[in-house]
Length: 90
Ligand SMILES: [Zn+2]
Image (cartoon, rainbow, N blue to C red; front, top):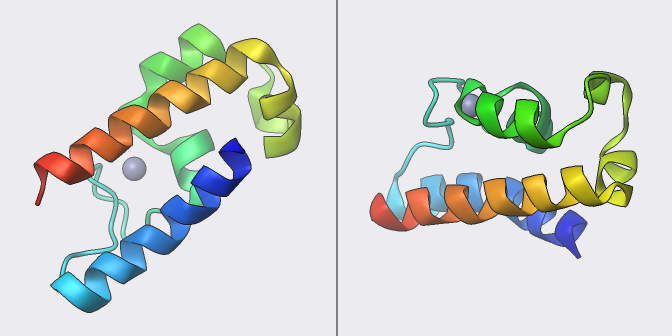
């Protein structure tokens, strides 16, 4: 289920760019907001990651992260917050 949300998110940014002439860049300044950037690298979610992900999360696949209940709920929370950010942006 969350995989689908993350996939949707990846589609969402270019869609916004195409139809609303909005940038597909990440609010952190990264030129392209990809799924991997969002889950693993974006500095905006650093606090969430340090609370909910295990320390070796960079070595884990997205599927492995979603199989762990702590990182699962962390990613879910990040997606909700990110979604609210894009609504506020409209
Ligand atoms: Zn970012």
